[in-house]
Length: 250
Figure 1: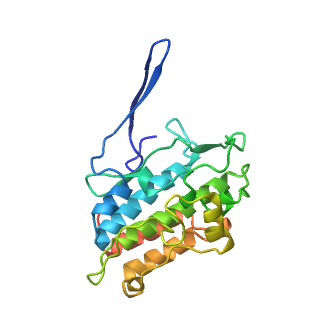
Figure 2 (figure 1 turned 180 degrees about the horizontal axis):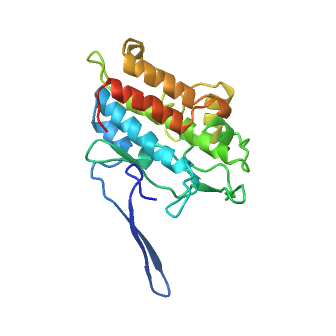
Figure 3 (figure 1 turned 60 degrees about the vertical axis):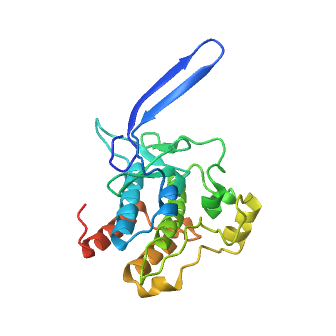
């Protein structure tokens, strides 16, 4: 599954004696670290923001898409998307990492390789239907739409660090002002499901065309109703148009 915006797998190995076993997973190395680390220590201009967002959604779009043929791949949902599971490459583009909780769709049998536990991932990034355990696990699109909610939160993290009018917000995790540092399921259900709250937008975003459009995109990704959320392909196309207006070559 080679793709510029998915962490490259190199090799796997097992070492051990009778009493212990070590599993090795060797991947490409990206010295800038995770998007979380990168945003904490770097501010962005519009071009940098669009490159990070577009490359992230390109990786997610590839994951979500079934590809047929000898070099094909099944449709895959990540299930633990967050800024700590996206890496930043030297060229300012991102790649998606850590597919340990992913599920795939078998189109031949029309079945999802159903996980035993629905409530996995990082509570802060879980959509309402995962928090409340109402997600339809036999319908693969449910997992895809759950990823899109998480992606909306990641775009919010990026946008806060984009300078406009000489102003930028400090880095914060989504819902930082609404839940504790290590929120419980109850904390997240109260905020995201019952009150239907979402991360707030800085006033300055309304006077910057790019940030205004990004705000609209993230709102349409984290909609309460999964069926109302944008698909990865739709977001990719919207961001591609924004890249064009900024004259950014991919």
